[in-house]
Length: 140
Length: 398
Image 1 (cartoon, each protein chain N blue to C red):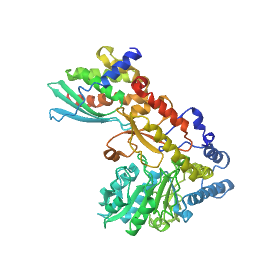
Image 2 (cartoon, rainbow over the protein chains, first blue to last red):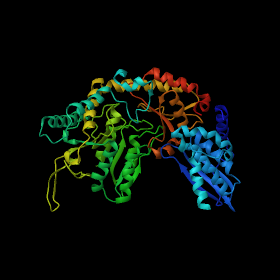
Image 3 (cartoon, helix red, strand yellow):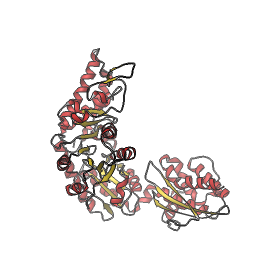
Image 4 (cartoon, one colour):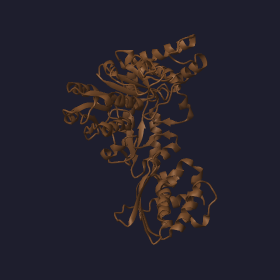
């Protein structure tokens, strides 16, 4: 992926507010994710039904990498079953860590393949994935 | 001014994060190297020549600090690791023994975490009440609002001289008079003011004062706790061990050393003290009044130039210190800081350890510029130009 394409994907997802809203509904599991060393701080709301992720919303304040990676990840996870979702998250995290990963399941998340070279941004890029993974593992 | 004294400034950076820590003049570094090269020894062990030199330097520094803040006695100066440790010492070494349930401590929402959290712990442990002096529309503390906050139970007022986000300068002398009229002790956190304006503990009649060496051109890991002598007499040591005891016996009897030595258990941060000594000489040579005037003019210039930018929001136009909190509208503070860093401009993004201030500011995170006398109008012009070109900020930081 060239730099322009990467930047366009990150920016357009950053500006996509479709899933960026608070939810007041008991069907959703709410979790907060923050990075103590910087100032990223979001709430994530996940609705799981019969092993399927029916919906994810989020709201809060964070840098462009944190917000955009959250939006992109959410788009990739909605309507997946928990196993498939965890497979995506695990491979996304491997990519962020600079390890070998399955390129076929990440779609637009591939725009963040450069993060592995920026150690200080890894926590931004995994702000949502860390907490969503926890919730999914508990829901299995 | 005096830029040639700072090697860090040769690294092509614009350093606007002086509220976090200041750069160090070369003389501070040289003083520390001199200690390690020429008279390394422990303090208070004066059995040989170099050790005596260390003892003398150590106590000379105490005397220098006494003069710098115009304390009455050298014994009123306690070396700590920094303002945070000093505040913790005051709260847990003094006030924990003095306060009782329902006694009230007045602070504000714009205090640094180190002047809030120790009081919260005391609130939980012994049932004191932490109350907040209301801020005015410019986030300032007015004497009327202090009056309003005082009740019969108020025992302590604990405030920063200058706050670290908004940068408002508190009317310390007036608050002190009001406090003492009401038999209230006054604790002042001078971390953000000590290098930028004259602090005179006698004129301001301050009961306890704290500050850090590294925010006044000295090394990290060294700071000061000032207390009026009669108050220090009532303060308990927090750390026990070598250097602070006169005698101890098998049955558990301990006789403490004199004040302030009893508060400095263990081998002290000797290089820190020696570096701080050099930093104080340095500030005295430049002149604190000259520094204050220069920084005030520079701040005015920065504010005037920032006003040219309608896409930049400044949160504290109306305060007098060199700390400016701002955001590019609709851009997250950290993204702005990363963008400025591309041009080697160092600013801090975040809530600046003042997490409960966000309700008052109605914004969670800001970028902060905090000035020093080595900053220049040319650096501000560069900042303004970079901000002017920030239309495509995300293209640059992604």
